[in-house]
Picture 1 (tube, rainbow, N blue to C red):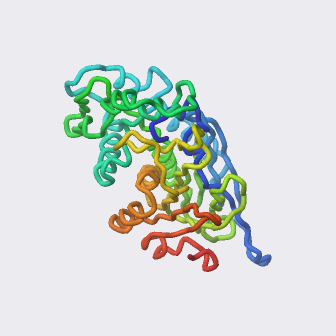
Picture 2: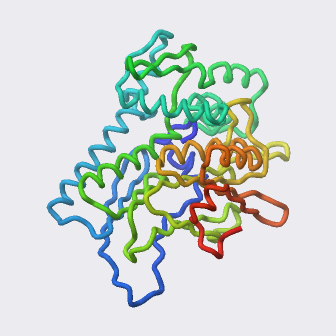
Picture 3: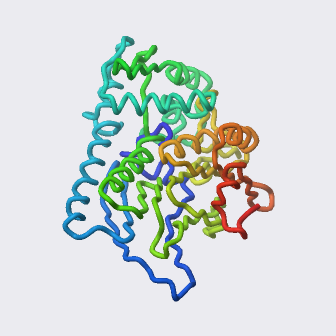
Length: 356
């Protein structure tokens, strides 16, 4: 959800750049007893959600669970939507005060966590980047087919910067030092919602499940074959829909950020929707996509965005420094190269044949 209104244009952010295709890949072992599966589906945050339950609860409990899932998603949407004008975040953004503004404990915690990731990534992930994304034509405003002028970039950049937001969750306040700053949690909220549903399901006694919200995935336990869930990563080359690798996932979230499906061409150059908040420019390096596995789906989503902005060299270095399980797809003249961080390889997420 990097700096865009995912509620309004769900195909504009990671659903367009997202490489993860949820796939329950069945084992070839015919003698293995399969567990029962049930999928719950619905609408939320301008997209769809699905909850795959393995060995589900009884029907009476499921009726209650369906209602609780929808209620929790509605609560998060009312909290962090940038499309709904009545959401708490939208009200905060309309407030032009540069004095501390009282917010709910949950919204403050979300903003504080996002700011911590901004600090760790040197601003490569930034919840205030929305004005720049809009300027480049990748936000909810009208599309453009040419890069902005230097004057336009300078003006938009002046109202961008995570250091212009301060969260004091002990006091329950958030302050912006520039009245034009707007916070967009699109790069956080769907992953956060997936994590919240995982907690809800666990509290209800559901041990094995896969949650997917607009491409953000959280897996717990095992699939119907009593194996880790198998998540297929699509080829990042636009002319190919092949599945080069499979990630084995259990008790973790996975998110992918990519730069190759949402772009425009101008004067022979291609401009991606991946905008570097630090410079205001569209990135030009050959890194196509980054997949991150982490216990927190919200964290995986935000870090994947940051690593994509940083590029394969700096991104891999940061992933290793922070012990992040990350998998990089890099364009070359002959196709796509794949590299993985130390934590990704140590986690044994790939089958042996997929290891690079």
